[in-house]
Structure formats: structure tokens, C-alpha cells
Length: 433
Image 1 (cartoon, helix red, strand yellow):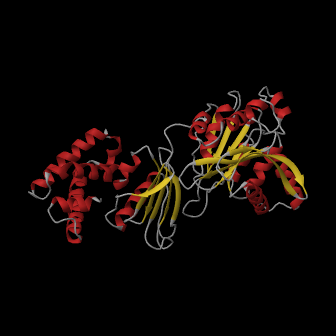
Image 2 (spheres, rainbow, N blue to C red):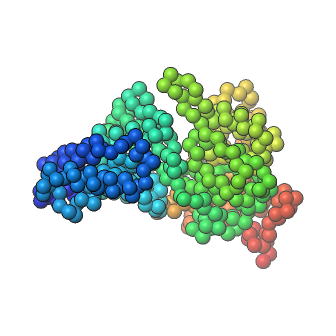
Image 3 (cartoon, helix red, strand yellow):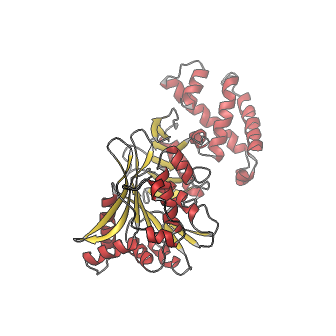
């Protein structure tokens, strides 16, 4: 329920339209009086408890001229709401404080949804009106040095806590401003936790450890919210501490479980359309930074060419993600992105480059119940009849169980790295227990 409705009930008007409008006016009036009494210049340096006390005192003074307007039960709600409005994200603050919420989706002022445990549900959170939502969006993007207006109606940025935000406003958003916030956990998830959650099997976990330790180039693919970044974070734990890692992302999300990490983030163009730095720009610069491994949060465009070349020229153990519906589609998308780079190479040559660059591809999905699972693990065998040929090791069967359909082609590589697999433990077909 919105604050307007709660205040409407408090004034005895049943939360109808007229009382909601009166409550909105009351809140706005009290809010302005409180803000006028605060030293807003240094407000973000004030301890939250001290700020809350200041708001409470100023609110008490403002309410003296409005006897019987707000019952005592609503006083705390007003203090919290006004404090959130001044230093936070207003109505969204309670959602941001909930660690179980992974996504917040504001579909106009009247409809706010969240994702919890992979399931989307509508909340009772509301903004007072479209102007209130737009003001909140402006405060968010201003804090991170971005802008959003009719001339630049889309923005993608990162909050100080690492959460990723995307906002789009009219005229592109037909029904009103839209805000999406992708949140990330307080700490990285381990591979063991993914196994315990049922994201992957113990056999897969054993295989992934050996693949990372033996410096295989890994491509993780899947849809939005399937858990690609989470899996990359978990895999990073098995990179040697002696290796230098450079990460490149549009909005920094990776939480690699290593210390020798250099994090690079793209930059959008300024108001004049200049000064933008793309993933491709950062990747080319990263090659001059003496990286042992390069991890790109996601390849979307021409930077795929530079990534493939890096994987083919000594940067073994690199990883990246790509959006795709399945493993085969991931290679189709990579080929399309290589074409976007304007390379004069033939299609057959590009196919050879991709097949030589990538050792393993992992596809992750999100089930209808919100559970995230690894649906397929395959090794690149080579090129056959102009197509990348795969050796599928693990796959989800029609019953939702994992089946093991092959044996690894990388045994010699794993053994040379001192991380040989135990085929009996993995359960390869034909292996005797």
C-alpha cells in the first residue's frame, strides 16, 4: 500500500481517491518544510541516525501548525518516508534493504515488481505520481554522473553498491518512466553453493575446477537473468593467485574471488556525443596491461573479434558470456558479431578462429519456477562441414535430470596441469565404478 493510502486511512477517509490526493498534498507540504530546515549541502555526510532525529524534530515542528492531521501511528512512517526521499530512493528503499530481492522493476509509478528467488511478484510499493518517479530517476543518475531527459531518454549505470540500473523515459517509454534495478549479493557465490542449490551437479563442479585450473577458454551463454555472471564469479575462485586478471564490463558486476584483479568499465559519450569508451576500446588497452587472463562481462558486438584474437594469441584461461538460447545459437551469434567488426576474413576462416579460441561452452537457463540450472556443457571438437563441431558432456534430459553423454577431449590438458579428472567419480559412459 502506498503512503498516500495509509495516510488516507489514518485521516479516516478510507484511502479513497480524494483522501489520497489530500495525503499527497500533505506529504509534499511536510516534505518541503523539512527540507527547507535541513542543511542539504552536507546531508550525505550526516550519520543516518542523526539525520533521522533531525527529520523527526523538523516534522514535529511542521505538524504543530496542523493539529490532528496525522495520528501518532503514522508519524514514524512519515519520518521514514521523508528521510528515504531526501537521502535514498524514496519508496524503493525498503526493497533495496531486503537482501532476498534480486531485481526491482518499476513499470510506471503505479506498478512496482520484484524478483525473489527467480520468481517475479508485484509489490504494494507506489510512487505518488509520474513526476515523483521521474524525480527519483533523476536523483539516481545524477549521483553517478549521468543524465536522462528527452534528448537522452535512456541511461544505463551502476549504483555505489554495485547494483545496475537502467531507466527509460517518455517519449520512448509510452506509458511513463520505467526503472529497472539489478541487484547483486553481498558476496560472491561459490561453486559448492551452486552445487548445493542444484544449479549444477557435483560432476560438473569437478569438471569446471579442472577446466579453469588448466586455463581453458570458457564461454558461458544463456538468457537474461539465467545466472551467467554468477557462474563466472564462482569459476574465478580456481584461477591461480599468481595470475593477473583484467575484467572488462559495461557496468561492473563481476565479483571475482581473487586479489590480483584490474577492473575496467566502459563510459558513455558526453552531451556532445564525445568521450565514449567501448568494450572494444578497453579490450585493446587491456592487451597492453600484461594480463594472464581477460574476462569480459558480456560480448555484444564487434569486440568479439578482439576477444577471439586474444584467446588465440596467448591469453588462455579467458572467459566471457553471450546471450543465446542454446549452445549452437551462441556460436551463431559470435559469427554474426565477428561480421559486425568489419573483418575481411571469410566465413570459414572466422569459424576456424572461433573453434580454436574457445575450449568449453556452458549454457545456463532459468526454469519457470525461477531455478537457475546449467543445461548443457560442451567442448569444441573442431570444425566439420563449415560448422563448429561440439562434444557434449552434460545435458538436461526431458525429465529435468542431468545425463552424461560423452567423455572429455581435454584429459591430456587436465593431466598436464595437475588436475586430472577421475572418470569413475564423474560417471562417464563406459567408466567402471
